[in-house]
Amino acid sequence: MRDLLDGITAVLCKECKASCCSCMPVEGWFTESDYFIYRMFYDPPFELRVQHDNETSCAFLCARGCSLPADMRPFPCVKVNCKFVNQRLVADGGMKEFDNLKHEMIGLQKQIWEIISNKD
Image 1 (spheres, one colour):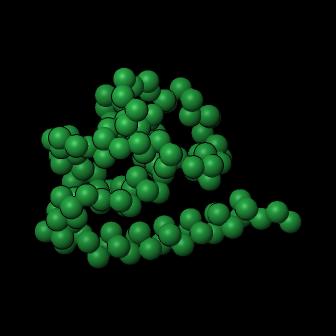
Image 2 (spheres, rainbow, N blue to C red):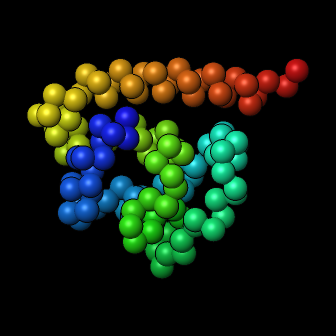
């Protein structure tokens, strides 16, 4: 999914006046399940956090973009697109692939939540 979006977001998001990562409080999207999955592969992400002067920027937004590894970005950060990204996906013929990948990720996320929440 990142391969599909990186070519679009690298241009559109950089020029956006209301970037999702800096104009809405998205830190809450990095959930407990994201943290557990992250820790399976990496050290704690505390050093990746960035202090911002405003409360609306994601704690993982740095000067180069997202400080989290591309394979560890929270699901909402990957699946939620603004209308401009969606328009480019349609124009580039990638919307069907994006939707298929999103549905696969939804299934994987449900499986992960079941494993994490299993109290047996």
